[in-house]
Image (tube, rainbow, N blue to C red; front, side, top):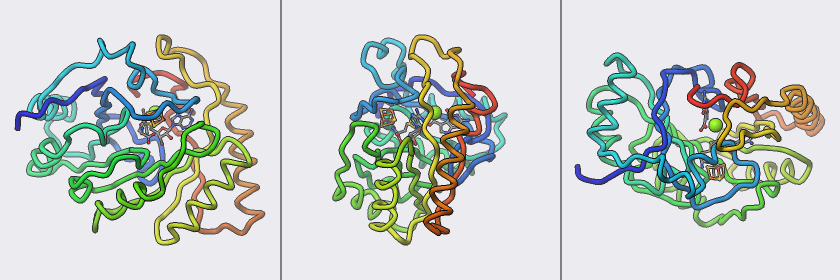
Length: 240
Ligand SMILES: C[S@@+](CC[C@H](N)C(=O)[O-])C[C@H]1O[C@@H](n2cnc3c(N)ncnc32)[C@H](O)[C@@H]1O
Ligand SMILES: Nc1nc2[nH]cc(C(=O)O)c2c(=O)[nH]1
Ligand code: SF4
Ligand SMILES: [Mg+2]
C-alpha cells in the first residue's frame, strides 16, 4: 500500500457530466500527468508539466480518506480522471474503496493497459480523433479492452468535425460490441491558469445539432450523442 499517486485535484460530489454515467453523483480524483497533448484538452492544469508543482504526492490511504470525507462516508462511484490516470498505480486505491462499497469508473484515452482495469465498475475509453493531433495505437486500445475482462467498458469520442466523425465511425466498426458515446468538442477550453474563462456554449450547441443530424442521416442508431452537462451548467469552472 505504499505506491504514491500524483494528484491534481479531488472534488465533489458532483454529477458525472459525460457519457454512460451522466447525471450520477460522483467524486472526481484527477491525477497529474499525461502521455498525450491533445490540442483542445480542457484539463491542461493536470497535463502540462509546468503545473506539476500543484500536483500532490498522496498515498492510496490519503486519497481514500479524502473520498470518504467528501462523500460523508456514504459509498458512491468515484471517477478517476486526469491527465491519464492509467499511468498511475491505482490498484490499491480501487481495492481499498471497493472493500468499503465504493465503485470506480475511469476516464482514459486507451494508451496504457493495466491489470486493475478488471476491477473497475466502468472503463471509459476515449481514443482521440484527428482534431486532437494525437495518433491512436489500435493494438494498445485492444489491450485495454482485453485487460478489462468482464468489467463494463464503453467508448467515448469527442467530435469536432467531419474527420472526427469518420474516426468515430471507424472506432465503432472496429468495436461493434461496445456502447459508443459521442460528445461535441468544446472549442473554448479553459486556459490552465484561468478556469473562469467563458465557454461558447452556443457554438458547442450548434456543433451538437450538426452531430445529431449527422448520426441520424447515417441511420447510426447505436450511437449515443450527449453534451458535456457540467459545461452547460457551469462553463469552464474547475472542480464541478
Ligand atoms: C480531460 S480527459 C482526462 C482523461 C483522459 N486523459 C482522456 O482523455 O480520456 C476527460 C475527458 O474529457 C474529454 N475532453 C477533453 N477536452 C475536451 C474538449 N475540449 N471538449 C470536449 N471533451 C473534451 C476527453 O476526450 C475525455 O473524454
Ligand atoms: N462534472 C464533471 N463531469 C466530468 N466528466 C468527465 C470529466 C473530466 O474532466 O474527466 C468531468 C468533470 O471535470 N466534471
Ligand atoms: S489524453 Fe486526456 S488529459 Fe491527456 S491531453 Fe488528451 S484530453 Fe487532455
Ligand atoms: Mg473535464
